Amino acid sequence: MAVSGRVHLIWGDAFMAYRLGEDHPLQPVRVRLTLDLIRSLGLDRFAEVVAPRPATDDEIELCHSSAYVDLVRRLSAPGGGRDVPRPQIVAAGFDSPDNPIAPGMHEGAAVIVGASVQAAEAVHRGIALHAFNPAGGLHHAGRERASGFCVYNDVAVAVAWLRRRGHRVAYVDVDVHHGDGTQALFYDDPEVLTISLHESGRYLFPGTGFTDETGVGAARGTSANLPFAPFTWDEPWLTGFEAVVPALLREFRPTVLVTQDGCDSHALDPLAHLLTSTAIWPRVGRRFHELAHELCEGRWVACGGGGYAIREVVPRAWTLLFAEMVERPDLAADLVDRKPFLPEPAAQERVWAFLARDLRALAQELDVSLGRVT
Image: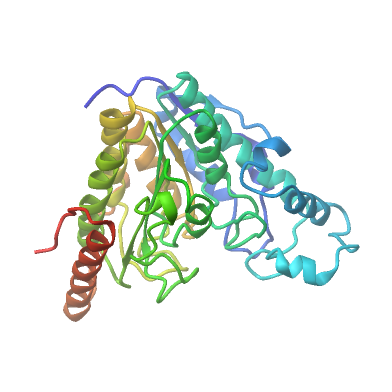
């Protein structure tokens, strides 16, 4: 494997400001715990730690309307937008359990967007080959709507920023929830490939991400979705990943790789039904690293994402990913779960059958050759 070279790790206490409530599943402490673990293992010695900065309105508006940004700012102010009509609030996705009106949410979200733009800029300018924003990956937000704990779609803004600078961008999303917001924002752009591997929308929010969602117009074939059945564990998950991701990236020939690395497919995560372990993360990180070097001259922007087993899983998964970025997996080897989480034999058969069917369907939709389940 080629030496990774310079790696940027975006981190600062400003990330703690993106807080949607005391009892909300998305708690920013998971990012701090990740950084604490990275430092305890000495992995930060192989990277430059860069403080995040808030995104400008112009940057946020690469993917969100100015009217929506103005609304978020008004709702974030003291009083929580009492002057905003309730139908307008609801239409924008707020005042719900997933996306409550939270003080300072504009400022907190803007820092996360800014950090993802910083990561993209570092990779674009050649200051870093790889860059990681663990607070990022808020992939559900749409142009004018909050969704799924996401106020602004930072990772989509990073993709759009790179597009403006002439890049052909491959975006790979391994969060257990379909990356619907990012897919929608680039669904008609032939210069952006979006790949999402997630639990099937038949069983899980946001109810999208099926194999027939492949893009429109000139972008037909530049969106790819592989849904997994509930109880999918490491072996079929990795089989699907290996069948889809390398083949589609090699066909697309990107100039930069952007990844959303939600770790909520883990068996201990309370918000989904997959059964992966932390053992998938060295494989995923290594493949992203290898493919970035093979296809993109090393350019790789990584963001966090979902993950709600806050202490048990998130720090371990993202530290394993980061260890691959800096090519020191030996320092994090003890973070790998000792054995897989296997479902009952009948469920195993259903998982493999589901995967075989959807790999065939995806290959047919895209008219490409993908790996098969035998």
